[in-house]
Image 1 (cartoon, one colour):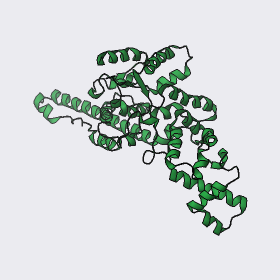
Image 2 (image 1 turned 180 degrees about the vertical axis):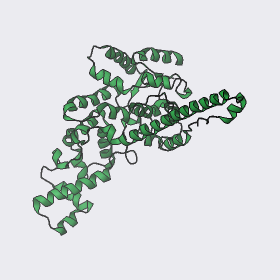
Image 3 (image 1 turned 120 degrees about the horizontal axis):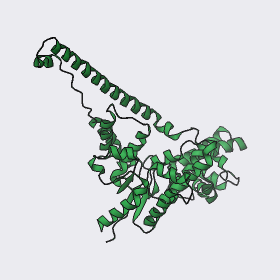
Image 4 (image 1 turned 30 degrees about the horizontal axis):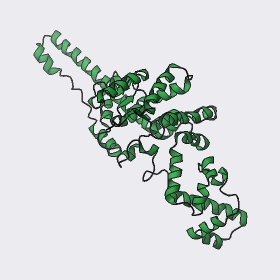
Amino acid sequence: MTAPPLILYLDTQDYIRLFNEAGDGPAHEILDQLLVYRDRGDIVIGYSWAIMLEFITRPTDEFREERVRRGQLVKDICGRNAFPFYSDLKQGACFPNNGIWITGRDGKLMTAKSFRRQMERQYLETLAEQQGLNRAQRRRLKTPSAMRQMLRENTSTWGTKREDFQGFPVSDELIESGVLTRFLKGRCSDAEFEERINRWFSDPAEFSRIAYDYADKPNLLDEFFGSSLDKMEAALQQLQEASRNLDDLGKKIREQRQNLIDMGFDKRTARRLTTPPQTPTLDPSDVVRKIEDYTGEGRAGHIGHYMLKASQKSYRFKRSDFMDIMQMCYVSDCDLFRCDKAMADLYGNYEPFAGKLVAKFTDLPARIEARLRDRD
């Protein structure tokens, strides 16, 4: 039996480096080797929502053209191999998830029912403006059968231009294919429509365009995770400050002990009178359980490991840590997982990640070869 391909996860910085570097640069030489492994079936390369948000964020006019092309780069490398969104993992979704990295109700970002309701309302408003419908005519057209009949008889150009959809993100391909108007006229099944619209939303290249054509926020990461990052940073700063305060207190107590000894107290009595407080041990188990209620069992132990390390007064917290540890919820699904050296060092003694983390992009070909040899 042929062994399944190794599952590889690239770091966001890998995509950024590849995008910024000339096609004949050293990172592209490594990529070319990875694509050879991919094309002969030795590996598959997957991406996640975190890659998309980090890689194409800051949708401003200055960076629009560049960021739209970034989504195409992810698509070219990964194809339709996606790690499901966290909330879908617990519901049984698994890699490669038919390319669906984004989530919605019942695993669908858009349902036929919600789209139909929204578009029929917009069409009715347009019709009312153009033909001056009275209240009774509007009420009659609100019934599904009457609205579909009206749309089937529609001879206008409504639905053939982006502006007809009043800000709802649609692609030129979706409009030109006719799937939208066929669906609204009842000539396209709900299943076909949902497959098409959700496949379009989850396409990395198309999502890049959506983010720029329709987003009104300057930074997607700040929009979705800014408050969580602020809370995480504040909590770790408080823990580190408490640790420093305890150290200072211990130092003062030891100084008082020496003063007692200098005054003539024997060492045993001085020690008994100046017992420093015990440093409390952080227990992250409650946090881990709460996260796993969302992501599924066994996917958040590394977050507890991070909390123990980051609470130490010597640890230098970076806001990028948040996205790094969230992406590591996928390590259990991978054979090899790219991360930066800081994260590789931090998890160097974390047994569940043993043999999976790759600290350097340039190390990937050798690590892939070693894994392929091990399974032969």
